[in-house]
Image (cartoon, rainbow, N blue to C red; front, side):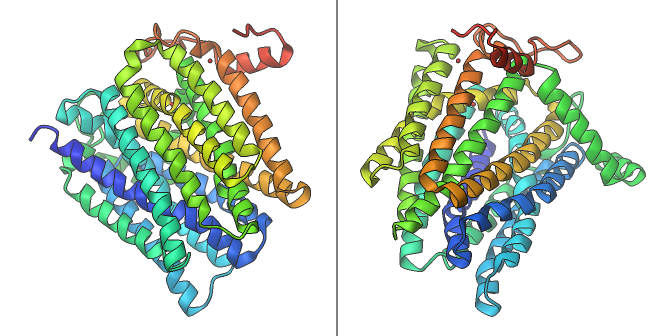
Length: 447
């Protein structure tokens, strides 16, 4: 039976991610085609931000009380239904901005807790199959990269062959298949554990009945915030760097590039650019898995950040299509080591009993940060133009890179050990490093 549970987990995760990859290309293009307004995309993201954050916090609280496998299955089924409703609504009533809001919120009910549930399940899966977490992270990252190569390319093919809205039927089917794959994982793998034993479901239900979901959600938010920002400097820096990556890359992928390709009359090319980026990420993830011992973690981290800066700068120039492909390839090749490292630090340093709260809080905060960034970018596109907005994003990425390099918690990555429960923070918070950098007093030497 060795390894079989982890294989099922990888299959389920790949199916879900493949569906999300297709939707990630199709939905921004469908919204632009429906509204004809770049600002509408940013406004939609902003309207959905707070409800999505609440959903994420409540989902994180539930993940520390209810079976994580069960939540993952339900989430995939809800996601499948919400995506399938888009072509149905288009056929019956016709899509408009407010339909996107309603269906986007319904999709968030599935996507956000489901994403967090998979993150929380992963360490339990590796423990059950007795596989090394760091190696499994590398394998998972490689498979994710392969999936995100295929996904955007399939999206480009489907959009060209059947149109944007009909292509979402494939996304719905993939989410449904992901739920079926998760159903084959033993229920015991998803049980919540504190001190080595499974938390009884009736205790969790009683707790929620007495205190309510709202109080539990706020407790989860407090716990998650404390774990992410007050227990360990590497964890804090990894979290904030993840925020920066999601905000800048999300603005490029979700707004700037769709607007650029739509304006040039070739929206399907967006999928091929994203596939090239994912191909580069796959190659670098495999290379990192094979060559990781050759360099220190700090060296991989620095090289990865500088390479990503070059790739972002090329994309931000919005050059001709071949050079856009080159920039996407450089960005993908450079991002592999940082992505693997950040993912490893997050799962290795968050205590198991707080994993649902911490990951739920992180995902919820990201779901506010990313829409704010997309909305700001949409305003910049609407008022300054696409090219100027892209240059502003490059400037933001330069600042993020500088802060990631100067972060005190990330300077001794090879010697740092995860702090034991109850110990004070091993490193000063990244906020201190930001303050020092802004004041010019920091020592500049950087997943």
